[in-house]
Amino acid sequence: MIEAKLFMGSKEENRSERAERRSPYDGRVVSTHPVCGAADTEAALKVAEAAFEKTKRTPLSQRIAWLRDVARKLREQRELFARTITDEIGKPLMFSRIEVDRCIETVELTADALTHLRGETIPTDATPSGKPSTAFWRRVPAGVAVAITPFNFPLNLTAHKLAPALGAGCSVVLKPTPEAPATAYLFARLFIESEYAVRDALSVVYGDAEVGGALVGSPIPRVISFTGSVPVGNIITKSAGIKKVSLELGGNAATFVEKSADIVHAAARCSFGAFVNSGQVCISLQRIYVDSAIYDDFAAAIAEETKKLKVGSPYEEDTFMGPLIDEEANERAMNWVKSAEKEGARAIAGGRIEEGLFLPTVMADVTDDMKIVCEEVFAPIVSLVRVESFDEAVKKMNDSPYGLQFSIFTNDLRLTRRALEAFECGGIVVNDVPTVRFDIQPYGGMKLSGVGREGPQFALEEFTEIQSVVIF
Image (cartoon, rainbow, N blue to C red):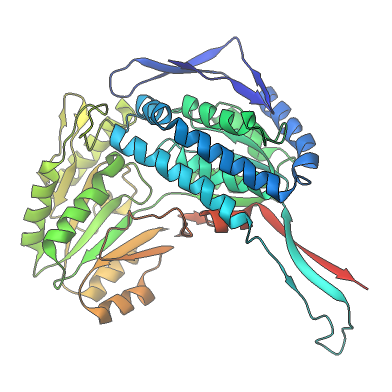
């Protein structure tokens, strides 16, 4: 068991009141963390405010060395971090290790991107009203940043905020998800204990609505970076005031399997994209629109692929899917299935709980008016919808308040080009699932799926400001 502490800048502190985190798989207490309140939050923000005077003047070479040092130490402690992720959120070890590896890449990519953080010169005498000068614009650290992170990727999604924020020269207050406090604590400690660390640059507080509200509503931060639900994102937007706000919110990822597609390949990849991480991913494949000419064959193929997936202990090396984050998530998933069945859909794989584990579920005969395709499910459930044409598929895919990532399976180049023009979303994948995300790419959505972009190069823009300079 790991006893997480809070960080008031570089100073590690405890509190008399502590909360427990129990494994979603077997109920063991796997970590504890201090219970923080608004006073702790305000204190951490004041530490960050004072620290920004140092972080913004820290040489870029030191910040790059800092990130590379964190990546190196994370690589050395790979198994500790992987097991902590599995303990706290029930992610199978195979995928926890992948998350650690991706986190290392994210930190290293950020260090690389910092060497390309440039501005450009401005020809101020290009217009009759101008005159010659030495003029340019550059990017400068934005200020104090608040990072609020989710449970589904508690390490890598934290890295997508901390690495570019600290690398850009900001000071940061992190509020990690209550479901994985130890993961965040261990990661923050790597930054704070590094020989290249800027003192007090990073603080960590724990909590939920009270702490989050105090962070967002304070006048101290200049940047709020949040990954989570649309309702919370809406609250943040209304209460943040005049700040830079980056929101990575919900999704309702969809794909179209066109009749020229390789059905075997599409079924295997769709099964993966729908059920990896127990469907608890913003870009989990939730809606599959299938050409009626191949609907029955595809439905049989994806049901068969889904039944092959091993569901069980997250500590076994070959387990593909472990538990959902908590019992409430189990109940919510079952309610989705029951609701769809009442409306005329049927489960052709899964659709039940065995030994406390919700099985990966494929729902067939789903129609547009069913709630299961209209809202974000955030569970290992995927719905098959029959369509007669590409145009029908596009209309149905776009008919959503979300616009994070879509994909298409096809061997028709003309349809691929049409999809690139027609899909209303932040990311498009061709001949794979919309669940594909490379950490180097820009990642973010349209509509209610969010504002701003992650990915090291692009996140650096969120944590910096453009400053214009004119010298006569």
